[in-house]
Image (cartoon, rainbow, N blue to C red; front, side, top):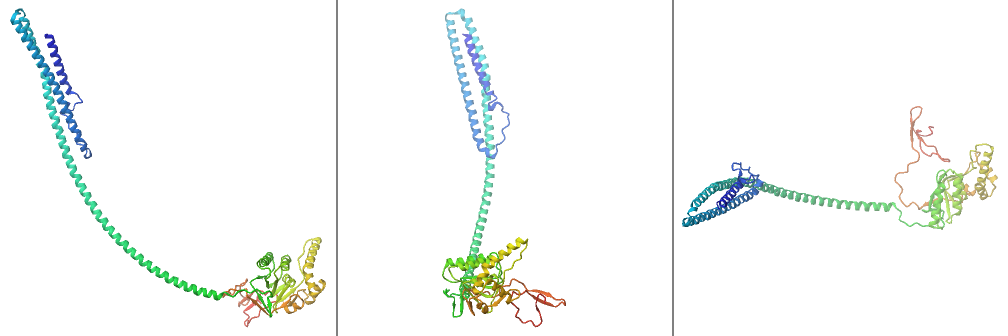
Length: 481
């Protein structure tokens, strides 16, 4: 029995020791009462620190309450066991007093053992009670420290809130000032925009007035230019007569082709293409080939023109105004319809060529020239009513050089030209000519003679031409003469 009581006492002491040792755990917040409080959290973490501190305080309070309840339960169990032991001792004492005298010593021994066990139990419970008191003091100290930290945090939060409120107030003041400034700027900008708009509207109105006036002036100028252009243009309808020569007047329409200067490569293209065009346009109305001045040229190019005139459905009328020689004279003479002004000059002569090479080459060149002469000069002799040999003999009878030239009236008698006309009307000129005369292909050259006297050098004259001008001081000279 005493052993069971001792075992229970030892178990109680062991439980008390465990209970005393448990609060001493390094993980417990109260294990180091002298530890320094944590540094205050930054302003942005103070709101989180207070709930954590409250949670920690609640956890410590609950842990202390549980430990206190556990120790109280253990103490109650020990007291119950002590009471049971005392009751048992009393019962044993009663039994001993009643009839068991020999057991008195045994009972007294058990009583002393119980007292010893009780004293030992009290001794063992004393540290637990002291530990409980220490835990209570530690809990109170931790609570006080936590309250101090919370109070410090609250003070810091209050300070920081005041500082933040001050910053917010300053920020709001700045924002208000900036808003006022922005509103003032907006008002100024609006006023400036309205002013610019008004200026733009005024400028647009002025520009519109200027443009309207400019349009009026332009319309007036256009109307005036139109009237001038109408005056410069011939608005009368073009009349195409089947017989262009009427009452001694030759009328040339816009179905007109120029043949001037030497007949070279490309001349036949220029003339023949236009003859074809006018035929395609109208195959009955007359076409006019006007020769102002041509010294002749290529027999091949000229022969193409002769054949184009000969095969044209529309009649081609050749008109010589100044000079037609050699191939140009051949074209005029072989045409079915030809005219010339009275002072126009027509010139026929033999073909000439510079032959070179051996005798065979020269003979072949002569044969070619004779064939061209047969094809071009023989038709002219036949039209004149003479042979080719007679035609060549008369060339040298007229001029020792063989260049037989005649004015138009004599050319008509020789059947080189069909008719002499005194009046030529160019109704093809439908637009007013330029006020300034066209520049010639040559330029006046200023020079000085041997005596240092300046003079104007005139260009060489074309064949059968001469200068007819006043020149009392000899300022105008030809080739320095």
